Amino acid sequence: MARVVVVYGPRGAGKTTATLRLAEKFGAQGLRVGGFFQRTTTDDLDRRGYDLVRVADKTAAVPLARPGVPKDQATESSVCSFVFAREAFVKGLEWLRADAAWADVLVIDEVSKLEVSGEGHFAALRWAAALEARMIVLLSVRAEQLFYVVEKFELEERISGYVELPATDAELAGLTLRLAPLP
Image (cartoon, rainbow, N blue to C red; front, side, top):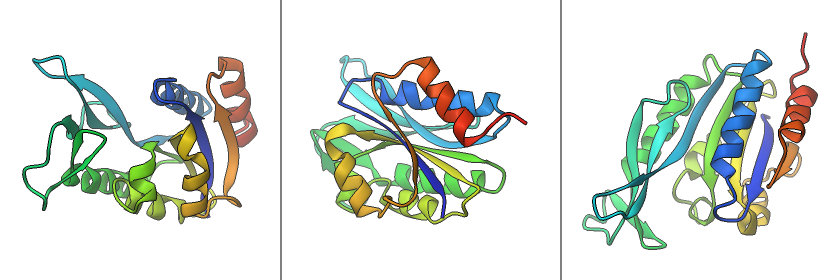
């Protein structure tokens, strides 16, 4: 089973930023990094939304969440005043599967109550956690959902490290050295 590293903290603590910094440090150790992260967007009314972005090139992106009420129940779901495009979750799983063919580390950014309820990146996380032990799955999780995520996805025995935010660069570097020591 894949080794899991969890970056966790409260809303606004910088989970995505810390997760990407950790991914860069794994890259500096010679590991290849794939997966996806969520990038904040704003519309012309200055409302916040999110795009799902592929880690490998940081240019492949699809709309993930926008403020509002769902118009099409077949393609959208609503949580916390955001409308989520279900096709973005399908694309995230597609990226993970493609990246797993060459990557050593897979990023799954922003695992929370949506995934615990069986929606969102649920299928992607379930699939990635079952990968072989050489793979590191790097998760960012909201602190208040950490227990539920670990329990729901049966991660207790797979977790190789935790990063509680705020974290220093030295703490991130120490974790990468422990999991992927220099040759």
